[in-house]
Length: 364
Image (tube, rainbow, N blue to C red; front, top):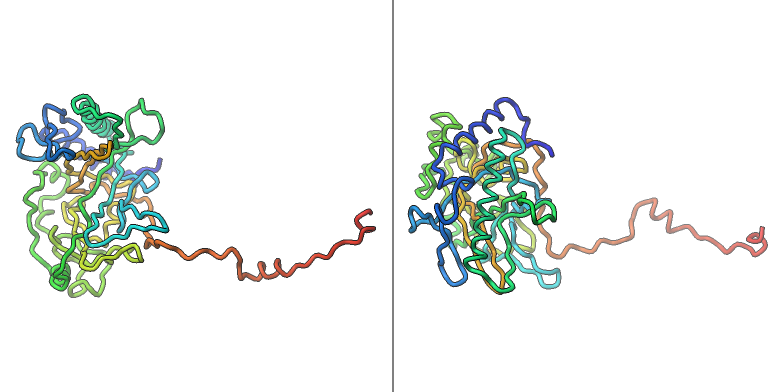
């Protein structure tokens, strides 16, 4: 499998640093090191909704740190304007409206570079997630229950450890009646605010220089008319909203938004700076090593239980030089393709007329 970057000495040093900082973090906050039932427990929010809370602070969700390398769309990643939205059938399409909850999905795999210990930590993450499901099956059994796990396998052998971890983002769009003020907020420079609910990341900060957090957050790499003063850098905050067409694949008859705006998700680069939506697809391309702050949830309905990891912060740590996957505008009802062609060769072929051969010629 192709590696995520050029694997330079500098890149490999970052992998080592990621491994070291994960080991230095409190074990109960690192998914690979945490133990279900000891560091976090199941909490019933409603009859069909569970959260997982910290055993050390029961009033708080269990926010854990995990790592992985982003896998391509062929493995299940759905990072796009329409995210994981189910479009329905061609005859009965399901459009995206203001109240539709659209989330993207990242499939994370084992790091393809760096120390073996980092890959071992990834395997430990898988073991922790599998332990949750197995223990839940025993403590809260369900009759004829179908379970959708937060992991998956590349093959069909269910006896081996899964290969991938599924991380779902927060909702990408929010309905905002105050469209004019939202547009101004999205374009006007603001003072960067602290995100109060983020996990203390002092260990991860060792990956960057001391003045990284004092610099202005990274703005879009391609300036547009909507960018204030045509500036390449604007101060981004997680409460900013944008016109949805900031994403290149937004548009078409799938979307029926009226007041919806695109949210600034907490997607960050190695310097802990927020990444503008125009750069999301390049910064979180396949092969990128990311560190995620995620919470754990489970939902049950109609004899179906779904386990979900919600990524609240996604931080790119090692960039990838693999190609950026193509993002096209989704067309619900594409025009039927005409089987005929107007090319000169096609016209020549259709003009050929064959007459019946005489009986005596056929006998020869």
